[in-house]
Amino acid sequence: MMAGSNDPTAREINELKVKRALENKIVANKLMGHGLTSDEVSQKLGSMTDEQVHQMAALADKIPAGGDSGLGIVIAILVIAALVLLIIYLFKRV
Picture 1: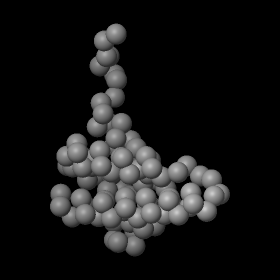
Picture 2: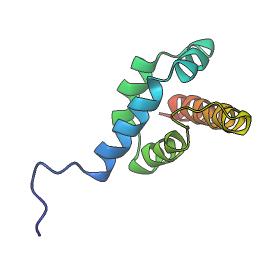
Picture 3: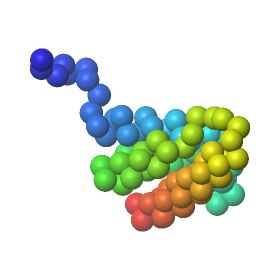
Picture 4: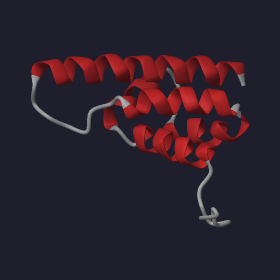
């Protein structure tokens, strides 16, 4: 089966994952604490390399959707912290 021209590219899928992570209140609050808004990061996505966007999407994939287990919360906080630090690092490089 041939891929249609409307099929999203890997980069588009990764950008969507990052944008969804930026909608997370904890991520948005952490970014604001470092002087960045989710909108600024979304705008910078276009100038980042595919690899940088992929790295951010990989971390965004690890953020649990919810749950009330203590371990899940700890993992979510660690992943969110790593994602925010990566965003800040990449934001300053681009």
